[in-house]
Length: 247
Length: 237
Image 1 (cartoon, rainbow over the protein chains, first blue to last red):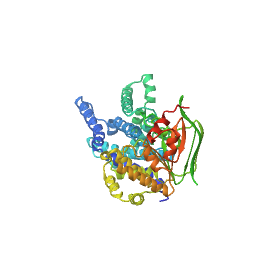
Image 2 (image 1 turned 90 degrees about the vertical axis):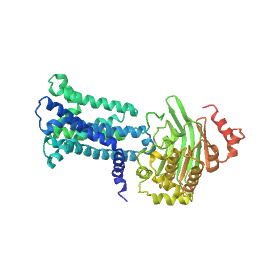
Image 3 (image 1 turned 90 degrees about the horizontal axis):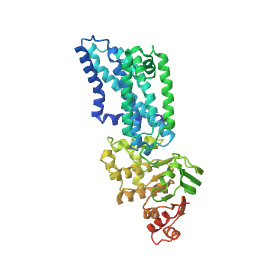
Image 4 (image 1 turned 60 degrees about the vertical axis):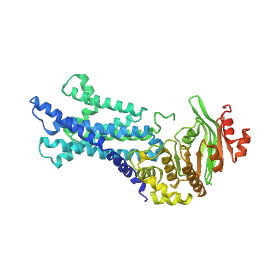
């Protein structure tokens, strides 16, 4: 019982995951849609006579995109949603409860990120041959670092006083822009695109998936440091009152 | 004795002054009511006590160590059942594990015959509970936590007479065990009938009363509602 306060974020994460699992249509769509898109693009490429590349060469942008979606539309969007629905106003009004809530939310979406990554691996790997545990664990580790990378802007975006609908639009625009600029900048050597690439988290996530965690150690350390900073900033400035409320 | 003492409180939003030189005291083991018209600052005051709102002047001295606040807004994840909502609520509100058994023991002692209704709601899906059922469930569950100061913002709003009766019985039971209860309401009758003392929020201050007659006399009224209307229509400042 003495250690009960320490278990709280884990117990809360369990309830948040249960809540997610009770919405199977949304869960199914988030898991299935990237895999379906991947097969559609592969089908179109095959029709154009393009030779299939290695598994990670072919899927790195997908993994980067899925990790950004978990951070933006899972971790951050649910924080905005819980604020705008009044849930935070009801229960989360002290520093301690804010910490329990944010850590619980982070744990829940860490688990969800593993679920999404695993599902995408299972659905797409067979196209390139037999699945391997070692490869899966490598992809999972890279994917999780990408999730942490995207959690940095996602957490900070929750501090902006915008409602549920506007948050959805903003996150969609950001997600699209990151992906579009990442792909457009891939084959361009124009100095402007080099600057955009440097500022685009999707490009860095793609590098982590392609190159590896150990090979991008400096980047991973920077990601960890900025993640801790953004988490503490969010904890300090977490908005409790819904934007629509007069308080 | 533990107490919440508010001295010369001043709060304003931009140029709108909500409180000026307002003072109030809440003591352990008592139920204190807070009356005031819409927009007079009841929720702002509760937010200030919970440090959700900064004060501009004065002092709030709180010697209670375990404060609980049930705000007007109650939002629960619609897909979860109320027992999961209870677990979630307790993760935020209690430092020790609180079970259904613990909650039932307390509220059944305060208001006998209530356990069956509580257990019915316990199993219901949150989205299928009415607003009144949720408020009732939340208020009683929160009271079962070992808090020493409980702040309830209009706990009986939208609640039917039966549930309202049980809420007041439980508030009185909690107060008898030493809990300080600060409760707001627009229903003057219930505040006067159940509270040890009550404050009328008028002219940006708290005016303290202990009985109906004193309240009516102070505002030259012949009924409680009339006294409330007179107090609410007095010029500010």
